[in-house]
Length: 93
Image (cartoon, rainbow, N blue to C red):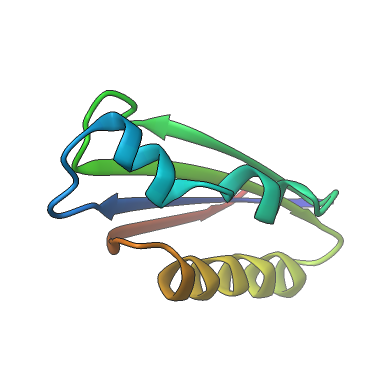
């Protein structure tokens, strides 16, 4: 079993309130938490309306499988979130 930790820091320029932030980030748990190989949480910047940090823990049988799923998540977040990914960190355990 291999574990990957993917952390994405997202800038939310022009976000006026925490309510708007929740609306813009809506669905992160539902989109990625459905996959039994992925756990997701907002790991930092919870009270900052112009930024958000999300961590994904990905499990897989092989390192390439984990890397592929991490890349898929990163690409999908960049396409679907109303914000800009400003920092990405990835670690394989």
